Image (cartoon, rainbow, N blue to C red; front, side, top):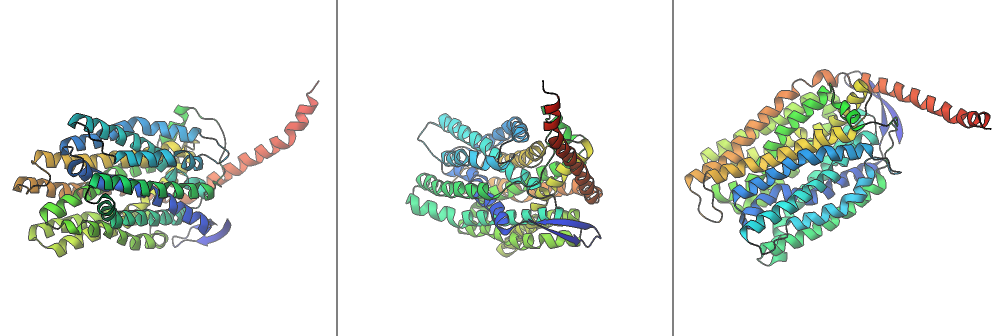
Length: 481
């Protein structure tokens, strides 16, 4: 790792720890591996439940929400486990090794479709999805939590997050371009068989990528090793306003984003009567890479808060264009709005992951407690999964209330329900997600001061530890009988 001194456009002198490209691509690989399974579940599980496995929309929505309620219990437990982890590989890195196989296996089981009765189907679907969801927390959280251990430099963290988002978008693009074609090809008209075989392939690649990341993502930021009680770990939340801003905004964002994604297949098939456009529409997520590529430069040019708000505002405007296009029956306007939403997501989605590492530093600076596991599981994983659960459940319940029946011509009321879940529900929540971000700038201005003071504290602790190590053997010898 190479140290380079730079001055930002805001006049702050920073010393950057230059991360190798091997490490950057390994970090990107974690989210490619994650999205090969996670994207299939997030984008396609709802329509898989209703149109392939034969579960009602209301039951499918309840399953998605039930898993999120369980997340409220298991996510903090994961956070405690991560903060208590003290292996020879570090805190976060070993979980890529330990959980990649279970995560992949239950991803396949979630799309396995045994011939069961109606009630048994619901129990099987709910059971496999809940277990997979727990494992996805276990392997997904270290992807975010390890960032604060890879480098202490704010701009290098943004760069790593950019590489991670590139990996995420590549994984999403690959899934959207290949999933349904491979389901049809491998299933020979049997979608149940096709989904199972495709998930086997995706899961195997996911395991290989996580093993590659485990090999290369060495945790280099040394932190003070002092025991903390469980209550002490939660102390990092006390007065941690940057973390609270991230949590609330991200919660609303994920409700909006997942509702938008989950409802797209219904909208294109039943409202536009263009089911053939679903793979292309979802593949447009790839254009977010243009915004992601600009992210490090934008964050040097202006405040991260401003970039964050621009991304969220762009997504809200995109939803309004979708509504206009649907009203005018204009496919062109619909696709422009859909594409604008994805482009803006390239700014709105990565920023919370980057600033979450800053909230870990803020918690340590303010309370003396460094708890990346707790802050990440609650600030990134819990809010994203709870938001994702509501983002899948709310539109499903709206469709059920409006009388949705799969594989039939929809009634005008049902079409209104689909439009409500696809267009206006996300628009409202994208708007709500902007409100807390407006208050983030004052905490962003504190970042250089926090870094400098933490470095002084850690240097002081390291000096004391070195002196203790030097004189402890001599004292032991003098005190011996």
